[in-house]
Length: 69
Image (cartoon, rainbow, N blue to C red):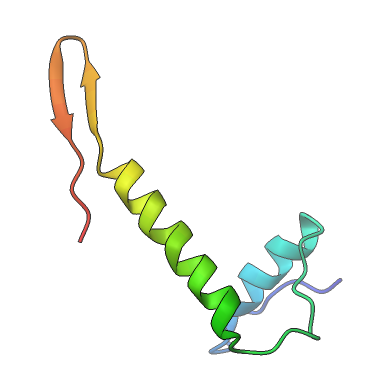
């Protein structure tokens, strides 16, 4: 495994790929780039994550509201 080079324009992409590779989470190249059913499931999950992240938190008697755009 080689280390990413900072001179290349793909440095961040390589860094991300090597991080995934270290976690043994390399992407499967057999996936299609767009699949309507899966995309709908992912979008629903993103909405649920955003709603959960935007929920109100109570810490030490103070109520904090996290707002994401």
